[in-house]
Amino acid sequence: MNHAVDPRIELRRALERNPGDGFAWILLAEHELDRGDAAAGEFAARRALALRPGHPEALARLGRAQWMLGRRNDAAASLRAAAANAPDHPGIAVWLGHVLEDVGEAEAAADAYARAHALAPQEPQIAAYLLAWRRKLCDWRDLDALAAQVRAAVNDGTVSVEPFAFLSEDASAAEQLRCARLRADLLARQIRPMPSAPPRTHERLRLGFLSNGFGAHPTGLLTAALFEQLRELDEPDVHLFALNADDGSPIRARLQAAAHALHDVAQQPHARVAQRIRDAGIDVLFDLRGWGGGGTPEVLAMRPARVQVNWLAYPGTSGAPWIDFVLADAFVLPDGIERDFSERVLRLPRCFQPSDTTRAILPPPTRAECGLTDDAVVFCCFNNSYKLNPRSMARAFAVLRDVPGSVLWLLSGPGKADARLRTAAQSSGVDPQRLVFMPKQPHAAYMARLQHADLFLDTEPYNAHTTASDALWAGCPVLTRPGATFAARVAGSLNHHLGLDAMNVDSDEAFVARAVALGRDPASLRALRAQLAQRRRESGLFDMAGFARDFTDAVQRMARSSNS
Image (cartoon, rainbow, N blue to C red; front, top):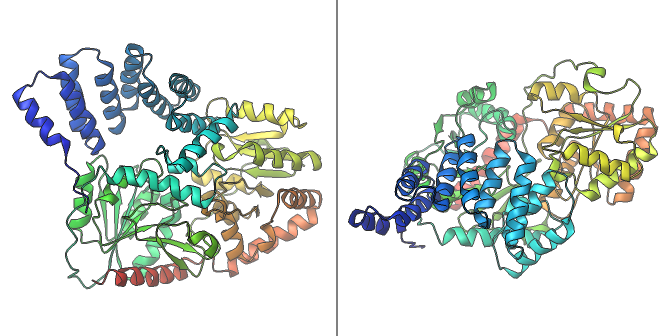
């Protein structure tokens, strides 16, 4: 068992003896923030600033606390001041970049990361931040060099980089495991686990789900109908632990109604969240965020539940000793990848990803309102901009060149991402005006617009997940090339379980050829869409009642594994 000592205890004792020690207040602020206690971190940072006005380290901790408390503009002001007072501090430049991302200053965030990398060019963690943000901005300068630096650091075991961002790299499942283990090992050295959970005394199985996406968020959209079906089964008790505040959305209301209890644990210290889970007597706890942003792996590392599961939101291995199972399916996680997962693999007989099958699709706006002409073949890719890498876009541009009059419909990205993609199109011999960008829409409006799309062109190594499910539900076929990692196989799993394996191809050449053939043959495209509509009704992919039964069987098996 990890017996990490809490450094806050000694710091508080030292400050009782000498409350005028500004540096000790800065250290205390850092440790409070690491424990997820933003309010205590802010208090300590302000005490430090009262003693040392303008101190960049104190300003940086204050900014970090304000960021955690959701006061993003205040955080940006504090970190800008910190960076101005310490222009040669790469760590402060990195934190400034994080906050500028959140306040929508995308290009300024890139400048902050570039500044940090220039100050510490040999630091692979900073290179990873710059690489990830440049991917989001479709700024492909120095991409290969940055990616090589980050992968080398992961393979050498020299530094812990963000596992979620690493999923976008052309890395193997084994490399993803190394990356995740480095991060998990670092966290394990900092976290003191709770005492072992007491034996189970309640009769009904209690499931816990921890996420920052319980609202109008992909996680909430994917799980609402499943939780409603679990309520209908009236077998396991479902407890949702929401790291995000109530957004007032209809999805949040549905989640609240479907769950046995929805626990609001937003902005609470990690230890308090873990205790809430323990107090609820959770038997099986699902981590619905993993290493993605906004999650709390620290809570899972405290071991609040006897059985803990990686499912749905993080498409890879956790690499963490505190995660017992990963819930998957045989397509998305075949035997060949299983050896590169730290968890025990438990497979559902259907696609591991649920979806909201209760949603009606509104009538679409006119094509003109969407920026589309009446006669264009509409290829689309509504994946996040960081997935639109040079290889995937080169493939899409090749399709456009060979299908006259076609367009590529994309989500509008941050900063100058759209302009950069248009420049890339022009360099590839494609009129940049054939790229049409959709501003971010409410989910119902987005789904309505999807009806104008003829064919979804997927990306890799990180392919469409929720976006693929959305496209299929709206009647738009998805063309994908399944890869060799979990993140590269989700769209393929959806197609496979839908009975449309012909839309899973095995090479870039086959991808382009299939898309071009469909784009040039309206009759074949109509027949494919009719087949999709039929398979949507008849296959088990969108059968949430069946999913709930399979899911319940799976969690019963997990619970039995704890010998409770």
